[in-house]
Image (cartoon, rainbow, N blue to C red; front, side, top):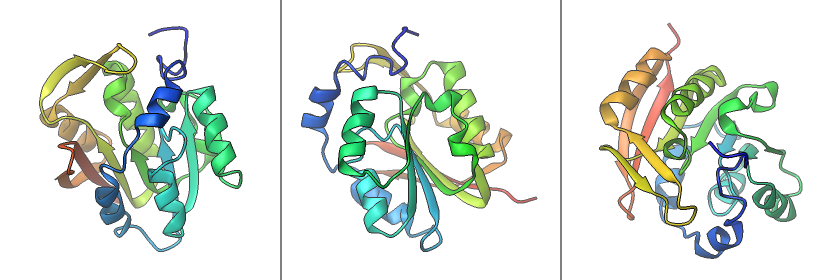
Length: 193
């Protein structure tokens, strides 16, 4: 872990903004159909808000966002001044002191060390309303690689461990998706009993 709470993302924010594509957007829109109309959604690791937060806003959701990069949060605020956004680490966040119908964590979980991933999944589960939905991305395989922008290590705990963690925190895996870019997603629902 570095002193930079964004784990290198603040330094590469301009490069990230220039490279962000709409890959995965159709997967996110499909997932959003499982949420109550006008429901609350928090986008963790929201970056500058494009395209995922923007899609949730256009679908009529009550959206909040969190990102650990001050530069990304500043760009987010320029684009979406009406949307609450916090500049903090997701794995330490109190998620605005509220619960949500949906939590998005696309491109975030695997950036954290193993214990940070476990803590984030625990916190996300706690921040969901009963039958709330969580969607996060991470490779199916257990693997580690160097992030192409930050040069820092990314880690996937693998599908088996993610499924185990979801069950531990009373989240039932509903579906898994693969988007047009080959990114893998886990869609889970908070169990009520």
